[in-house]
Image (cartoon, rainbow, N blue to C red; front, side, top):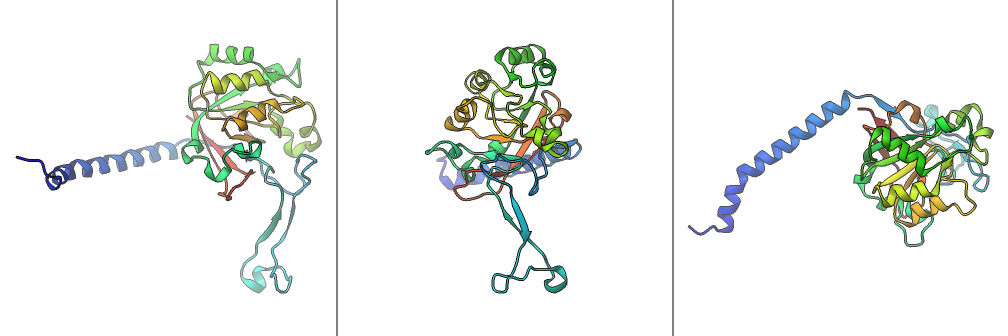
Length: 265
């Protein structure tokens, strides 16, 4: 018997139906597992007075108004209200896409969706801060972490915990201090080149304190994104969690406030 295209299609129908059902069952099972887990918000709430680099200036929020009359919309008169936001993209917890530093880098609307949910690794710099408040997390520190927790897995998101986030609301001026605890360039380079991580993040507004911003420049010019001004990393285990991070799909966007959260194991 010759296997015609029609015959092949008929033979595949039961298989495809089963495959579709199995895939749906897998997703349903995955959702039940995830829904039962604990979620941790890794995002800072922000407003007009929250810390930002002085070169950008503070955000301004005001009621959205009718462009014809200038009258702000209200629930009483219009049945709704809205806010007009005026701010730089790199405000609050935010994403830096490659195009932020690279002329040929991809913009935030082109970052693949699969890079928005990743295994989460948290490196803890806080044990080093008592002796060195502005400690740069070194390659030796990373190797010590791996000796205790195992190799940083390929394809993961790696976040640096410094507990700077605790000053975001209670002491904004201290949060903006220079220098501050951050990444060492050698560590960033090793994570991307030797461990194959997808993205990194941290609690500060900058990746490191070098004059030429070596770490941030390296990350973005090598096609990776980063998340800055993260929060609550002290509530996430060193490994085993997932991170979900997303942002508005601004066409050709060079950065924007992001929403990130962890799903704990």
